[in-house]
Length: 95
Image 1 (tube, rainbow, N blue to C red):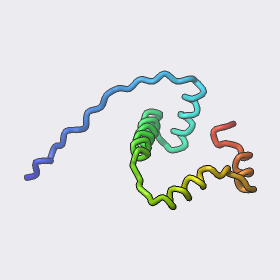
Image 2: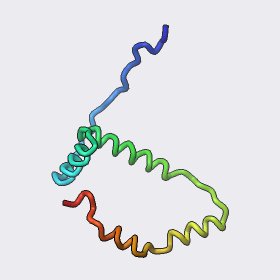
Image 3: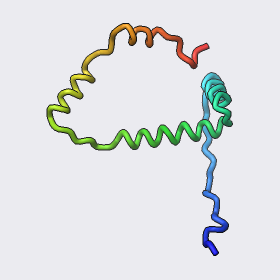
Image 4: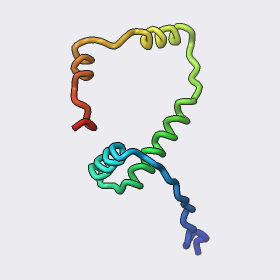
């Protein structure tokens, strides 16, 4: 007989947020587009943001030449026809 036959569900707690009406409406539109409730959408978004924040703190070691190339790429301003088109495009969250 398995000792995990009736696992205890994970504990949950309430998190209350105050948000402007326009932001709530944007969140609601995005949640509906994904077939989620507002709460599920916000929990998923917050979890992803938290994971990305922690991943961004990872230390990556590279040799000096690779680091110099990386910094030069970061210091080069974006440009070109594709970039201009992207910047001029209507944002999905704008009506």
